[in-house]
Image (tube, rainbow, N blue to C red; front, side, top):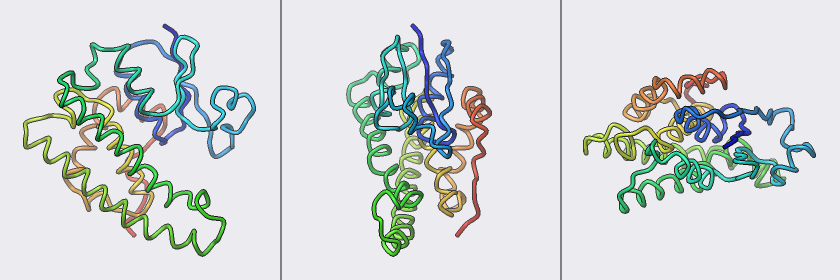
Length: 219
């Protein structure tokens, strides 16, 4: 099966990028330079008219949206155990992934790209500090999930195997540093994410995307 991932460094595409690297399968990583507007090119919009990353082209078929891509990878690489197989554990993992993607992620977008939500400068200015506080509290909630998993003897957020929740956690705390949230404000989460980053497949993806964990100073 041919696999090609369109990704942008540091974006949420990091999550499927890590899963593909973990799988050991051959795939083609294709960088989309968002800062240069490559997502708006006619060539890219022929693949994804919404002009977003990630896109996974699997056997010639483009798949968009994190949840769909991750579930597809879970199905084609069942041996990797990206999600638990026990029904309730699987439902809980999917619930957390959906929360990360549809709640925590958009909150950061209000900080990083407030122009997407208003064309009024004063509104844009107000969106940043308000959503920074929301994002800070969500990182606190994520830290609670890390601590709960550890108290249950789990090495990773959804069990004994590294998976999408762990890769997304790294992405989210990294974004927090861009928003001026010191990673030390959530020490258990920060320690956990450093453990994620030390995993060989994750380290290879971080090197390919040229990422560092802490991108800013505390506000």
